[in-house]
Length: 59
Image: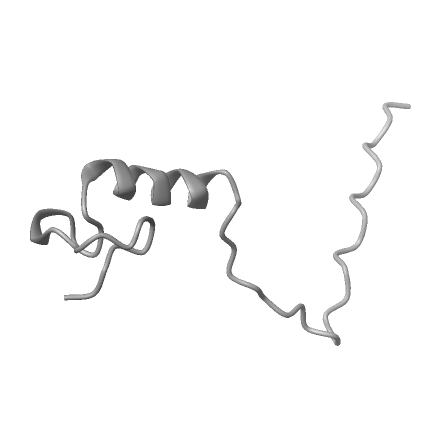
């Protein structure tokens, strides 16, 4: 088995790939607060959406 990705201790099958609930929670918190991110390339030919139309005014 590989080591825990957070602390490098041996992984526990109950929390795989982590060694404990604490390390699993640390990893989840990093995803939730934006420490981890999956890079994405914006399409170059993609134009921004048009601005919303102004509301109609009663006459």
